[in-house]
Length: 140
Image 1 (cartoon, one colour):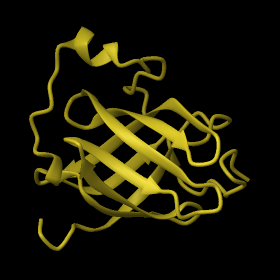
Image 2 (tube, helix red, strand yellow):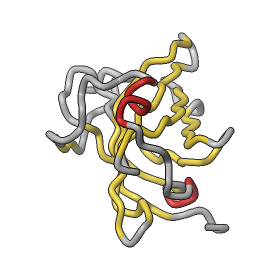
Image 3 (cartoon, helix red, strand yellow):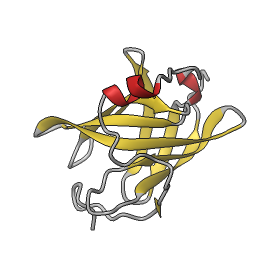
């Protein structure tokens, strides 16, 4: 069972290149990287057996996931970290509030995030939980 809402953790992947402790808004500034890939390259539906489908959208010039429709609802707002694929996602619990930073990573193929989205949603597990890409939005 997972720490977030008792959902099982089904798919994990440890990425030794992801900075597990670089979880501040200043991390992006220290590295001097900026978002170069259009945000539309990341948008679409991603699925995980335990967390079901999440949809990455754009809100306020940032990547955004609204998963508030679940029993343990949450919202994620993404800040670019480095390499156009690594992000810090700020998790807000719908019932309890908060703004907890979690690691996030997109796997690209042919200039689009079409492979997977990894999120560090399970504090007890030292791996990202991977969501498989399902589909881009119809307008992308």
